[in-house]
Amino acid sequence: MIAVLKPGTTEQQIENLSNWLRSQGLDVHISRGSVHTVIGLVGDTSKIDEELVESLAIVDSVKRISEPFKSANRKFHPDDSVISVGNTTVGGKDFTIMAGPCSVESEEQVMEIAKAVKAAGATMLRGGAFKPRTSPYDFQGLKADGIEILLKAKKETGLPIVTEIMNANHLSLFEEVDVIQVGARNMQNFELLKELGRTRKPILLKRGLANTLKELLMSAEYIMAGGNENVILCERGIRTFETYTRNTLDLSAVPLLHELSHLPVIVDPSHATGVARLVKPMAMAAVACGANGLMIEVHNDPDHALCDGAQSLTPDAFAQVSAAVAKVRGALEESK
Image (cartoon, rainbow, N blue to C red):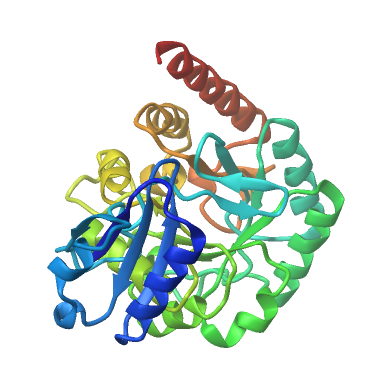
């Protein structure tokens, strides 16, 4: 249930109403928009007299949210959420480009890539320290040493870092990580999501390989229900019967997620296609359909990468993608 308050409602009136609603055993979330303030209620709202609340002088309207995801729902929070990450933000008018290697292989490799992607326009450095691999014999990442290397690159370049967590037991290693990524395979690892909900770090939540948008939003709800509202959604392709690409990039997800939710949405064209030459057109298309950012894999020597070299761009190719994305964004601004 949400209660939309009338313009001009004072902070004291909002506080009085919120305290009364909390006394009914409900969790209260307050969203202050440009015109209206919305009070969102989570819990058993069946005992709340909807007509009574709507009759209050400060209440404009009361609506029940039929969807099972509440905190992630745009009705709950009409304005776009903007997530602060270090010296930058994700969402709103800002555009985010997270770039870097699929896996951290060495300090020299990460430093070289970090400097190159920053020069080309990246706003965050992504890199895998813990790597979930289909085969148990493939490179699994440098783990804690990989995070230390990423932190050194952050200190050198100033870029906030994004890296994936595999197990809640590793949370202590992520204290200085700026954005914790939940990979596609862990999108429905609900115990992990609950633990991340107890943190206040930004969480990048990737859509599962065969999951619906509703399931993605319900996973976001797990994190937000724990009190962490700093969630970034990521469309990274879903598994279909197509074999020419690694996955099928579902760009329709971007405008649909914007309709359903206030959370920022980014797109990962690298994992979606698995083919380096397809990253540029898919990145441009992602911008055109309203993505708040991109996650792109970049490697200084893709032919000898320990992980996903086929989908990784060289630094020069990444610079071309970044320039093309800037042109698309410019064209969109002119068309407004």
